[in-house]
Length: 246
Ligand SMILES: Cc1cc2nc3c(=O)[nH]c(=O)nc-3n(C[C@H](O)[C@H](O)[C@H](O)COP(=O)(O)OP(=O)(O)OC[C@H]3O[C@@H](n4cnc5c(N)ncnc54)[C@H](O)[C@@H]3O)c2cc1C
Ligand SMILES: NC(=O)c1ccc[n+]([C@@H]2O[C@H](COP(=O)([O-])OP(=O)(O)OC[C@H]3O[C@@H](n4cnc5c(N)ncnc54)[C@H](OP(=O)(O)O)[C@@H]3O)[C@@H](O)[C@H]2O)c1
Image 1 (cartoon, rainbow, N blue to C red):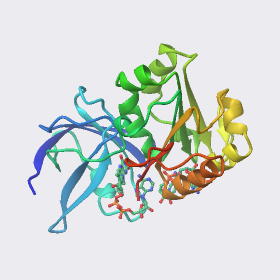
Image 2 (image 1 turned 90 degrees about the vertical axis):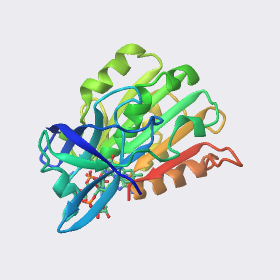
Image 3 (image 1 turned 135 degrees about the horizontal axis):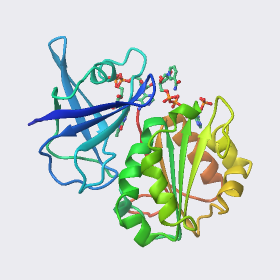
């Protein structure tokens, strides 16, 4: 399997654990929502893991949004990279967490935890969601308010069309002025999310993309299935499209 060598242009530290890596590399065209891999040599072994693109397909440098996880072999090395350092990538991106896998619908719900905000930013930077969906809701669930990163990227989406687009932050471990507190599945079950969003989730009108913590993806899918939404499959189109980060 061939790899290409990229060069780190910038590491932006958002919090003690959250950071973005901006990388220059010759990679093939990709679709918004797809992921590449980053690879480094660690103790004589090559260690590579998947990372979603945050940048739009036509945007450079490549942008990746990461967290250092406790005892995580690769993330704790990637966070040490400095401008000018090499990092390996795949020439070609992969993944089916893309809008062309979704049937048409009126409303698009994008629900993420932590660093899984990334693929949704890439998608929102393209024209496709704006051309295909009447209403868009971006939900970002984090433990602490300081983890609500990429505000400068999100603000233009709100300004572009505040009637059609709403950004809804969720903070689970401290108060969240202007956003919602607690967890996404409970907020859906209680009707708090839809009340805040001014929009109802229904099989008739909604496509829901879920990304990040597999427990959030599962618990939210369960709540949505109880409402009549079904998993989206190529042979049997439904309403729920997912990507687990671990
Ligand atoms: C399709 C796909 C796309 C991904 N995209 C991203 C991305 O854009 N940004 C990113 O930070 N990670 C992403 N990941 C996770 C990433 O590949 C690594 O697992 C992560 O960077 C940790 O690597 P590690 O070697 O340090 O620890 P690992 O041994 O890989 O992971 C150790 C543990 O850390 C936890 N963990 C892993 N990733 C995360 C995470 N993102 N947030 C919270 N807890 C986590 C899990 O409990 C996991 O079991 C993605 C994973 C997949 C499958
Ligand atoms: N973020 C930090 O400050 C911090 C500090 C120390 C260590 N870490 C470590 O860093 C790693 C990643 O942390 P993270 O905060 O980015 O990711 P995370 O643990 O996936 O949490 C992100 C958000 O997802 C929510 N969530 C978790 N399970 C859910 C479920 N079943 N349904 C709905 N929502 C759910 C969390 O709510 P809850 O808060 O209710 O779980 C939180 O709001 C973990 O290994 C963690 O131990 C993080």
